[in-house]
Image 1 (cartoon, rainbow, N blue to C red):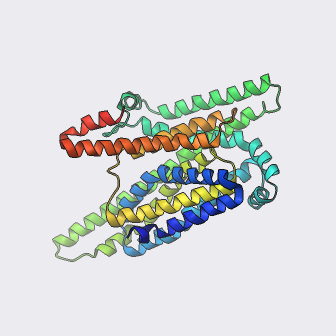
Image 2: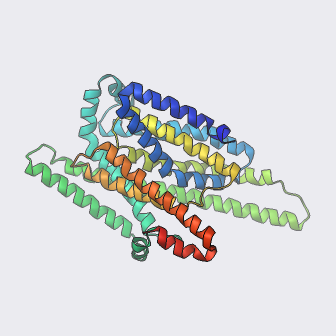
Image 3: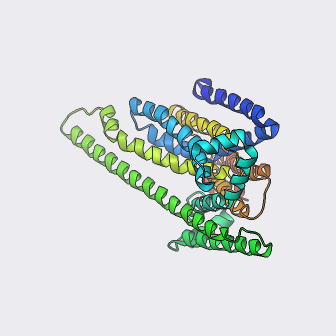
Length: 379
């Protein structure tokens, strides 16, 4: 069953890593491997959410999501979207951007480096908003309670995450402008670009969140209507087909899943720019990771759920927060891409280990040990 579910992912991984070695040697291999791990880790909660919705759909719509949905998610968001970002910020055509990355890597690197402040500001703000909205939300399960509990109380202040994000953006833009002026560089005018790109990242986050909320509300309305129809049918003695019920709401489910997947994939794509600007390595790493997310979704639907590892979502969001800070710092300073990637991997591995410790404590002491285990795990 495991090989059947993850077979294509294993095959794509092998091909992708071999292609990375051929393209850029062992350093490229390391970058692609880190990107793959980050994409899987950051999208783990995406797979869990997908599975919860997908299991409500009939076989036809499940197949549509796992075929057409894969094309949209892997080729649309993970392969095409990074090219579009580079093309827009470097003022190139998409085909020209890909051609330059293959045939004129030095010129391509020069253009992308020049456009990096805008990319970093856009991505940094988008990822920062994801992290802030997560950390300011009051949750039943807390990982690092000593920091999450007081921040959850602060989160009751309306629009706090937006205010903090804008303050961070202003500081980043002013620091960039000040340093450029002190060094007599010609980048002082780019402070405005950083500011505009950061605001664009914030607006993008709000739009994506709004669309997700819209489709989620639509989905809840459809499910409520179907539940009422089923109750009416039971009272009148009629038999209602579960497949028909699933089919009536399937269209909204499918749209909701695609918008949700797009919003989740933004963090992986944008976070990838903190590790590398190379379109080829980015496409290989994110493509491999996206295949595992899809396979994991299928596995969760067929075998149950892996959300017993309750701190993984926390670890993934802390990794997103770290990537957002790193992106904003790279507006002015260079950070080694391997260090950038390892920060996220370490945070996610730590959250996984904490989840395992919590589960063992719960098994050993029973359900009442939950709060003790969570405190112990969150040190």
